[in-house]
Length: 436
Ligand SMILES: [Zn+2]
Image 1 (cartoon, protein in one colour):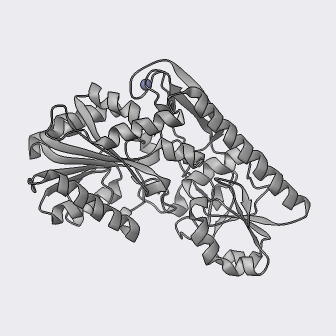
Image 2: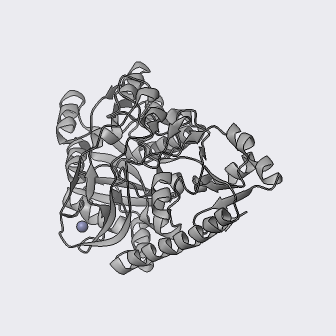
Image 3: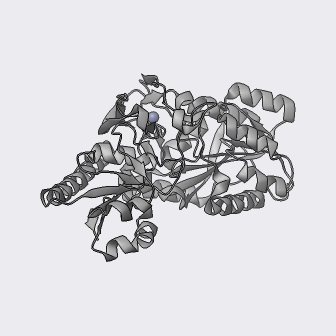
């Protein structure tokens, strides 16, 4: 369930993308903190409401209006957890996920190193069961299997689970829960390793899955998770990572008390580069064999220094986003006043947040170029801007390209050097507004 690939888009159940229309998702608003249950929740950032970030539609559905849902970010005064309280039905968001992690060489390498890191910590124990929650195509489990472990995947995307099982990685097609954990425990025994990558930000009932993890984990077992890190979101102005699939914006301090509440202890909190900056956390059952590493205290100190334990810090973050919005709007309005044509480059999920909040609509950009054939010939969620292949830049010769997938600005500019050579301008919206 990796979340930031430009390839991750929903697919019609039993059909193709061309006959896809997303059903209207259901929504409910929590009234308590997802981690501690506290009820003192401050609204610190209110982004423009959007449709689900991956709800692309076909040309035939251009005239159908898509529902938009609030993107309000709340700060818990009790445990400092930053989160969305509006929860869209996960069945709509995840069941037809087509992102497949094994297709990206970078991800494969990432998971190979990840498995090696975990295996080293299990030493001398090198066998036993490894369970991956949100296992996608089984890439990570494949490395555990190679290292001699028994493996079991769990993934709610039916096609992906079936394919992984066919390829030798047994995968349960379900959402992980305490009851699924019970069944695994009965059939396979306790797990030496449980992993969950880019899952902890996506699940509303974190308490429930943590109970499941705690019950399934062996007494000396290791739970490892990767999740996008609030420190990176804050420092690098990654506000466009805020969309409905990402319910939680984790930092270390709230997680310490959260794990403690569920019979576990956080023992490592390392920073890694995935997805613009993530956290690789490790936890064990309380009283487990490993000492708490220095990385935990170091992370907490860094978070306190940034003021992430104060609502006003998040409000200042909101002000910073507004400043970027004003700068970008002025730049784009200036170009339009000169009669320039503007297109977008890149249609990842996060472009939905960026375009809505920054007001980059069909009156500003004519089309969006995306390298993924899965998105070409579709229309963007809500705004219905056409997504086209890269050859369109040559055909239609826009004067400027707004790089919506701005975390890939370097490679995008390199691949489109010819556009720049003939006078085209690149506009990079974040972390600072720049025109090149
Ligand atoms: Zn809380």
